[in-house]
Image 1 (tube, rainbow, N blue to C red):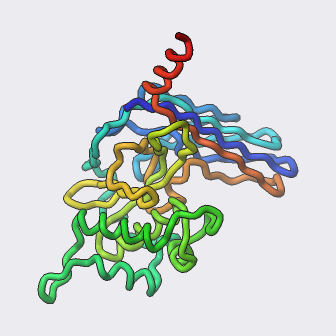
Image 2 (spheres, rainbow, N blue to C red):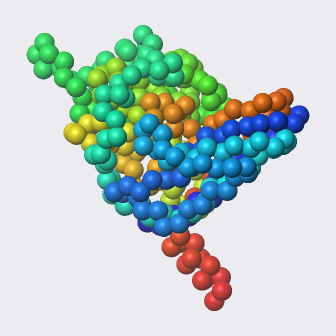
Image 3 (tube, one colour):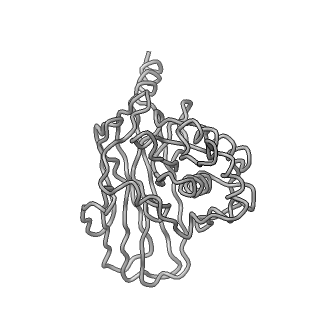
Length: 278
């Protein structure tokens, strides 16, 4: 399936910013399950391309001139596989993704919830397999339904779990925390989701867990144990490592951010355009 993506992020400030640096993980990598046909990144100032510690493509955008706003645009086309294609290559050992962070800590209530998905054989506890993680994912979405406006970007897994609602970022952090507590390396993934209908606001987050010697995808918010509708941008131990746009600035006062990401299937869009021309 070929996808067209248009992702724009704009920042405006109450007062003048003298200097700013933005760390952009907005360029998808070439993977076994995704091929990048065309991609471009537009941003002000100077841009330096590098790679972070996890192997993500990273652009560092530096604006040295005084400014009252920044607009960043990532767009292009990519082809993704219609079936799950798990990653097996590791830039860092999978056990790195067993590390707990402030966003992925466990509460007593979360431990009680996750305990039911640890298979026991006699008196010996075993690491759950992929089927148990699918069950965990399904149960988590039932326990924490998707609802925007309850949590915020700094909300931790424990906060979202106690509030009982969340969005894709919260679902991912909770699922990661449970996986790690069960002894399974798990990493946060940022990217885009094709919803299968019309153009969709589709900047998204999901999880990859190291089971059966490969990284398998778990999209808790949509109940999907596959990456067949997903275009991956980056991964890390939590949101802070994989955030598409993250930066620092000097000055500016209050910040206002607006963002949208539109994802469309290229073949369907071309067919619709041809039908209109006839």
